[in-house]
Image 1 (cartoon, rainbow, N blue to C red):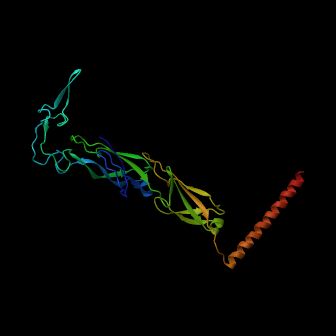
Image 2 (image 1 turned 135 degrees about the vertical axis):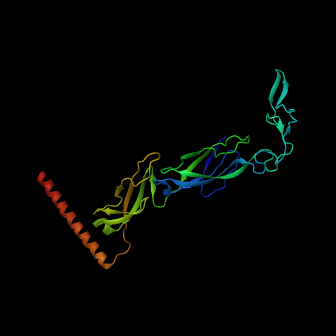
Length: 272
């Protein structure tokens, strides 16, 4: 017997089935670093009836010879081709039955119930990856080993990091002065904040790479990279002094552009 499951820490409503569990386990970026993390899932599937201990009858009830087959475990039926023998449907071929059945499971020996399973979440696990947990699926009414539990992982979107495979991306806001003059800023990573040097004349949408600051690749020792994307914050209001400085910069830029235009015209005239 197999049990298919998806786990969720929010424990959403789950449809019950004898050998199937449906839920979600949501993990965040903190689970995707370079170490193992613990996860817990409550799965709904067939579990052994506690009232009768999985026997199908109240405690102390004795087995008696099956009346359907006379204790043989087989029944016979005459057909046009001859006699056909089959397992007794009442005792399932055992030849023994209980006259009194368990009130909880009605003799089925299993019930739909909840079992908590603890998992080790591997570093680098990705969205829709499936984990197999041996012997944690639905219980077998005949007392054999339980089936396996299959858990589908859902990765919650992080408010800071955006993931692309083993690489992660993060946005960083620069002031105008930082973009023009450069400086040092603090940047978040999966292992904590780091100081990053910003080069002078950094442009909007420019990015830098922090090597091996990404997510561990599953079943390997390699790490992805972290990309820092720069955006420039434009102030919505300026003081008189700030306005004068910006205007002065604008004049110098315009003058430089005019000089370059004259130089280009002279160069073109000389070439002709």
